[in-house]
Amino acid sequence: SFKQLNRSVDVAFFGGNFTGLPLHEQEAYLKLVQPFLSSGEIQGIRLSTRPDYINPEVLDLLSSYQVTTIEIGAQSFDDKVLKKSHRGHTARQTEQAAKAIIEKGFQLGLQMMIGLPGDSLQSSLFTASRIVELGATSTRI
Image 1: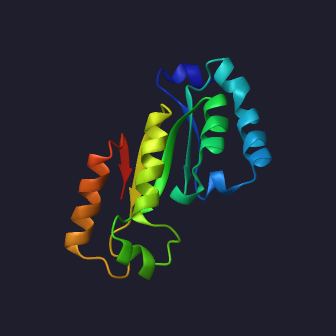
Image 2: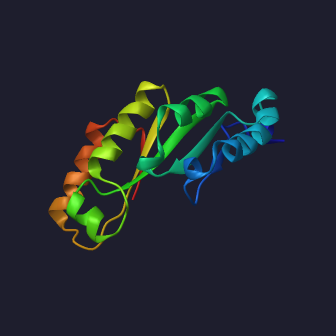
Image 3: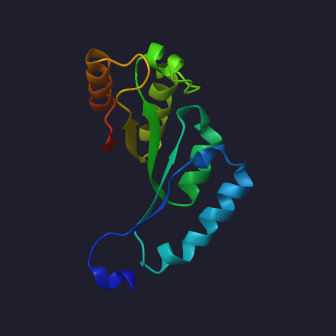
């Protein structure tokens, strides 16, 4: 039993773009976890996704299934780096997604990658400062 661990245990949906799945598939995964939340075996659900796949409908669904943390693959806040790396989103989309996530009451995680095409010490430091400014509760580098 996870309860015997005497620490917080979360279920995580990482390694892809969870909110890029059709809503019915997201819901199917989230339903599987609900008995563990209800019993207290786990305390939360966290997932990772792309910033351009965050919208009010998705956030409402995630909230209704007690998702606690959403991690965004920001990677950089330098649009030149994002474009050269073919990330498929802009810094503005990440900022908008981050603000919407926090406003909806989720914990925000932001992921950054250093050394992407076009990256520099200056752009990496800028990305790190934006992560702090946006109020991320966690960061993965």
